[in-house]
Length: 225
Image (cartoon, rainbow, N blue to C red; front, side, top):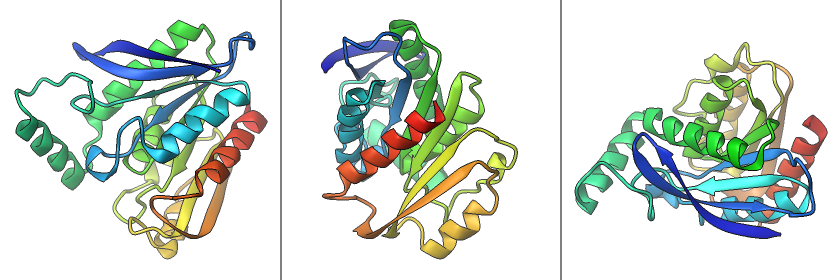
């Protein structure tokens, strides 16, 4: 497997990412990986995101994980660390994903252009799950998505009522962002085809469960390709 540290443009900013792929696979399907909110362990080195970035290329996918604006070495339009912190804190409190969706869309375009294939899946974790869902609905090139730890308790999933592409939801039974009751209620708004995988005896951070998650995502993407 090859990993390349890359940069791409988004809204006039230079963002960083890591492209991973098997050089022996021709025209691989694509997987864009959207990290969590930066105040909740959210960068492209997150434990769940990095394992996905390793396992999916081993199963024939080309992946791109990236940092949103102002995270890691990705540029920001703000002047200092305090302003960047306040910017992301405001997003955490409002669930306004608009800038993150712009960044994820730019990442998706970069991945398509660089690899040269159009079949793409999007996987997102926590805040990144919201980004992945909203990006998928707005992008005809996306074949389906995986949402890990979707914050059902604070986020309306009604916009997925008419989305007919494959959807995989992975949730933990002890996740502070959503109770299982909130998960079940949120799933009622989501059209088929959809799969819900509940992982037991773990919390929002999925420590020691990363490989299990990655294998579920890989199986889902390969079946849905």
